[in-house]
Length: 123
Ligand SMILES: [Zn+2]
Image (cartoon, rainbow, N blue to C red; front, side, top):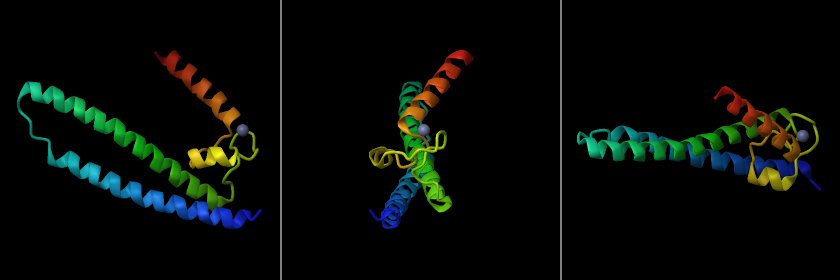
């Protein structure tokens, strides 16, 4: 197994994806500026719905973008593929689905449980 070559390929893929997302996000933010002129209240409600839909879409893109940026940073540091919590290596399958992940599945589940409880608590 040639880990180094593999990492180069991963890094190249991540860079490509990052550029794609950058373009997408730039276009989306342009769109947001161009169609902000609706006066009718009914239309405004619809616009608000569309807007929040678009925002949540953009959130997902931004989230992915951040994940990729994080992954690239971790490749540079030489920590890529290692769980930030327990230090075990993260499965390749998981890294393919979530390139920006910082935790192995078990630790991620623990983490989300904690975050979930925290969110409930703050309500
Ligand atoms: Zn872990």
